[in-house]
Length: 155
Image (cartoon, rainbow, N blue to C red; front, top):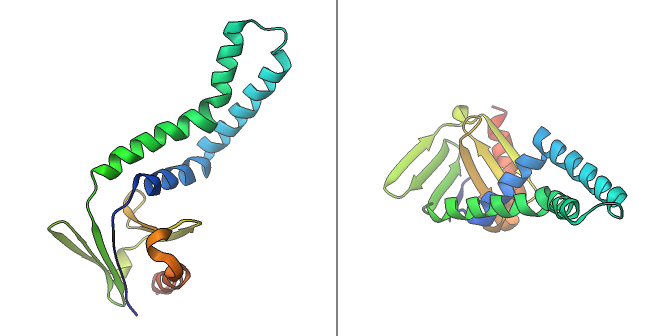
């Protein structure tokens, strides 16, 4: 079986990946606790407080649900603008990747992990490097590709 794609990761793809990992970790839990605490404090103290507190409270309430995702998106968009088209092929022998002038062949035993997120599939070479395959390029093949990758990981 063979799956082949040519694509370029967009700012939105990288942003989604970042959001999955921020809010799927202890950092995300801390963000949620902080937001709930500052929202509660804002509601309880709103009437008895001055303008300075109100401005700080509103900014605190907006920090993780609005400001942080916007900042992460800005960074992701900048990172995506520096990327090149990736040509990737999955077959029985491994993964074949071409980017610009470079080509790389990766055997299945070098793959450490795969992950299926709602809008993408991730193929990890190690804990920090891998491939992001967005749902927009996988379309109806997403589940089939994931099943194929899972079967290769079990060997």
